[in-house]
Length: 192
Image 1 (cartoon, rainbow, N blue to C red):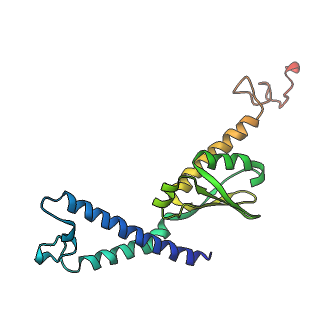
Image 2: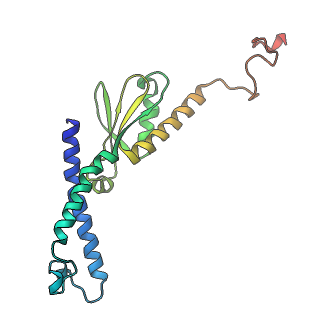
Image 3: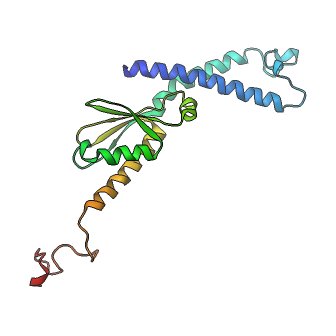
């Protein structure tokens, strides 16, 4: 989908999410207010209602303005530095996603797409939980919700460091620079 069209779709989705959350909040406030009834939300203030006339339209305008800006602030791209290309670290990256509750839903030659496994969380995010990885050489580019991208990027970076660390040669002396302390670059300990 075109990025501009995708942003419009996200804005419309979030507009309705904000309306639903706003109505739930008002209903909750009405229910805990002594002597108030849910029908009071629909009455004007001069007839005993809880909201002044025109408040509903003002709330809709505010929700619309927030929904128009929200996707631009929330959905981002982030680079994750890797050594080599994606295929060198494919299993580590996929395992990182799966350990954080994602499942692979789509893959082509350029992108790998993941979605959350938890259906309730997906619903609460208006089904805007998709995270894509642009494959190829370094860096990997993650696209999706800012909070998820930051968490996934740090998790992948950590997993890649661990993966590289597990494949690195082991030394008994952590300060061994490979020259056996002679400073001549000779790594053969028998000549020292």
